Image (cartoon, rainbow, N blue to C red):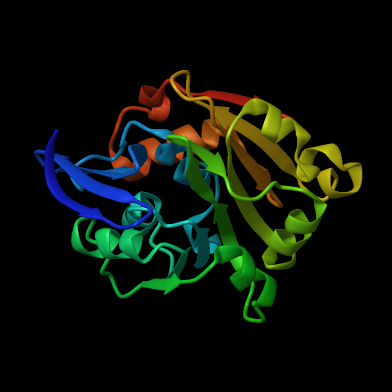
Length: 246
């Protein structure tokens, strides 16, 4: 891929690489985001972050919160295929927000992009609750992406406090072990508040996407709805695995 844009600071080296309509964001050589406006599936872990929304009726998802914007891939996919009324993205890194707007086209009026520490922002938040919260809070260390906060009881309580009673929480974990040990799974009292808990994985990634839903999640419904909305034969093109915990 060709380097379309780059920027160096005291701490980071940023690059936007392109091949045709595809754009990729790298920060210190860590691959953060990929987006192609002409493709439904981007071929990465980002696809699994918005895929679970196809289990739910469109009118049930009107207010979305995305913690960790990166290049904005998930926000674009949600806007295009789910069309919520409001999508709020919280991102600490101003360069990521610049790239998301300039190179990833994150300019629609439904987007509210806020430069802030997502953890501190949500702790102080006093507004309306969200129908969907996506936690994609990753930084980078020694050339590898890693979560910036453990999903312990304290963080889980904050997330759930801001989720509507029939809402969905989607979390990007760095591994299956992180998913299994998180408070949402390990604490029975929290675990029992959900109607469905599903783990999604891709063979080429160590990440595990946790889907914690107050409504029933049906993988078959997800596949059928995906086909209807996008026109693709099947989201199985992702070659993902789904494991139901309840």
